[in-house]
Structure formats: C-alpha cells, structure tokens
Image (cartoon, rainbow, N blue to C red; front, side, top):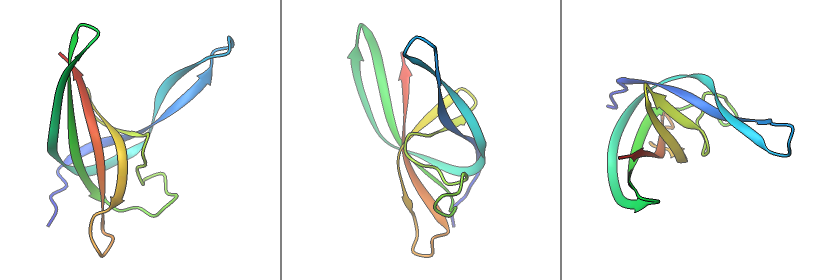
Length: 110
C-alpha cells in the first residue's frame, strides 16, 4: 500500500519572448497531486564559491494516462511550499499501472 500523504503542485515552465532575442521563464501551475516522497541519494560539492547540495528523490503518485496534463513529465517540477523537485524521469511503478514513479532532484544552495 502506498501512502500518498503530501500535496504537491505540478508545474510546467513557460517561456515568454523578451523582445530582444531572448526569453524569460516562469512556472505555470497545472494542478495538484497527492504523493509519497522518499529521499534516495545525495551529492555535495562546490560551485562558484558556494556549497551545493543535490538530493535525488523517488516520488510516487497516482497514475494518469499518457497525454494527460495530470501526468508529470521530465522538465516539469513538483512544488511543496518553498521546496522544488525538478523531474528527471517518469515511469510506471507497478504492474497494474495504478501509480507513477517520478525520479526528481532538489538543489539547495547553502
């Protein structure tokens, strides 16, 4: 039994032309999903004089059909308050197709 006990906001990046050949990026809410979050691995290191911590998570949620806006995909993110989980990969978790498994990472500057 999977305990979906965390409410996360599914977000997608939206690029808007800035009129000077570039773009700005913002995140658009697609909906909310209930999920289970488990930390898996962590990496530490430094970049440009700052310490960086990168943690990989397995996030389980109810399945949604291919093409549905409720089905997460790589490049999107899940948000919980100020925490942001960037989605790297998505696959079916079980043989019955009841749940999806999202592999995501969270980066925190220390």
